[in-house]
Amino acid sequence: MNTRTIVRNGILAALYIAVSAVIQPFGFTNVQFRVSEMFNHLIVFNRKYFFGIVLGVFLTNLLFSPLIAYDLVFGVGQSVISLLITIFTAKYIKNIIGRMIVNTLVFTFTMFLIALELNLAFQMPFWFTWLTTAAGEFTVMAVGIPVMLAIHKRVNLGKLV
Image (cartoon, rainbow, N blue to C red; front, side, top):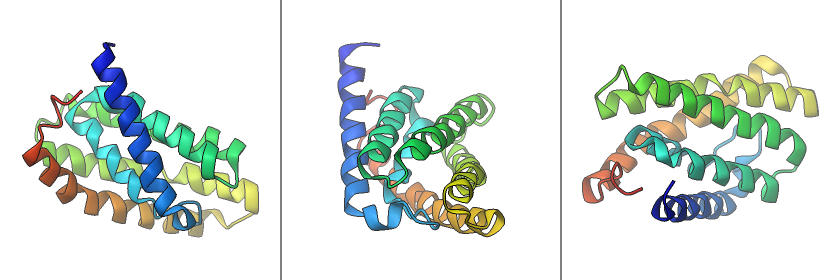
């Protein structure tokens, strides 16, 4: 990995943390309305964003989560798994919007890991928690599609890293 890619991933991680800090009261509940999750769509444009996204999630959970140990395993794990699935499916889906839709659905579905985490930590009901965390994730990721496409129109996100 070259210096430019490392620096840009560091900036991405810092942006993820900054946006998460602003909405922190809503980012660690059973709804998980984390606006910074729309950065997950960057993986659709270039898989080199993987490290910046994961580092951002890791540091955000380390700095702000009331469940640090759980979130470092479940939260980071959910991001890693979802990003890898999206990277794998990108080979078969050439359309950017199609990839973003698949990415949204993958992240929404894998919120069962966060529901499991909250179930283990706080004995929250698994199915209801999965529903609420998935709804929050779906909302943020769906709203993120036009936002990231608008940014991509101005700045080629595929060639940025």
